[in-house]
Length: 343
Figure 1: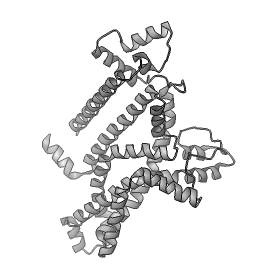
Figure 2: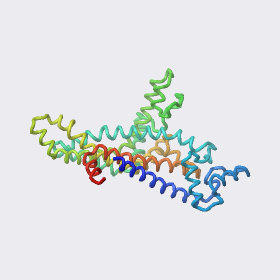
Figure 3: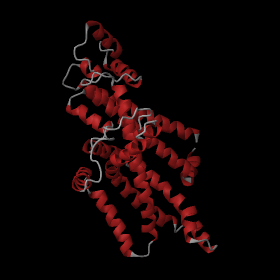
Figure 4: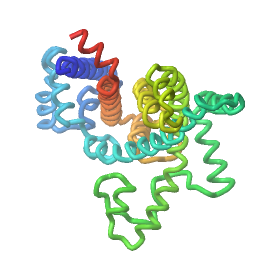
């Protein structure tokens, strides 16, 4: 197992190194001075220019420049934002929690609704129920996320007026940031308007989280259904049925835990698509996360923000993909068997 973890760690390092290399090359192609693209300082003084040349080894060859770029970026020096003149690393730490919060709520909705529907689709004897569930998933998978977000905003936000369509919290509430996660910060706050603010924050997150949850929801339903149909035909399930165990007990205690293992793998494979969907959703609903921050940087040609946003999103996708693969191996007895056989 240790050899396997070391191989996954090497894969993470190698993939991250290639990604940063591509980002380094793209930085050199920006239509601005290289010092400006690297630091975000438009008109550096003589001392700043000397410091930049020393930090990024601009008077050396490309290999040395890449090593210096790697050291600066991994060391937390992401430059200064052109528009706000603030540290990109500080801005990134401000917007990341909002994206994590939105992704977590979307995952809760997708898994909380997708797993039961997947089990129902696999166990139902009625063709109408099965076909209806699968039609819903196919429709959800096919609908463009930008159209769905705009439609939900128009319907529930404008026409019915039930839910807010932009932002994270009403401006009437002033919540001091502690963790960066709005819902958590509200609960930690000692404000007398804590409960109304919490309800308002929940209302704000419903539409973007629901929109973002559609894609993983369809994946969870279809993969759960397929996995459950496969597991229910296994020998140990037949043995449990022969012993007279109740069907619900068999499903909840024996079949479902084994069926969720391939579901975890499928979720890991769609992290890239999920991240791109999240960027679109954040822009549509003006959610103050990494996606809207990155798109705003692209519009304003804020090159350091572009680099910082791409670096953060790419590293997160690589890390989470490998982490899910490791968890899949740990929880899957067949994967562990192949792992020990290969080692």
